[in-house]
Amino acid sequence: MSGLRIATFHEYCNDLLRENGRQFDVVDDQDLWIYLRRRLRELNLKYFVRAASVSKFLEDLLKFMRHCHDELVSRRNTRNTCSASNVGSCRFLA
Image: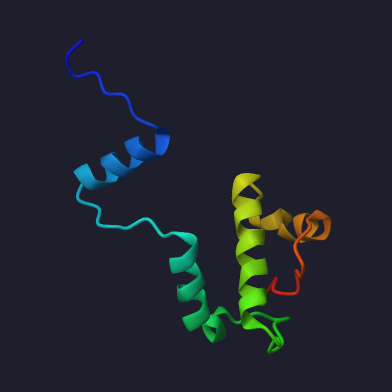
């Protein structure tokens, strides 16, 4: 059984991308939070009002994004998902 390789789906995809010359890094929650915080104005959110706690706003946004990712929510269904979720604030939907 030479050539047999055991890997998780994510590890396999990661290796496949790198083997084909794709340069990328995996972004963890902290990196994503920093990225969003630095580019908050560029998101052009319709309902974002300068929050008393930008940190809380970003935590809610990331929680919602993770929920949508885990549940495979399509862009078309984000508003319905937001209404049904336990996220503190869904006013960030543009």
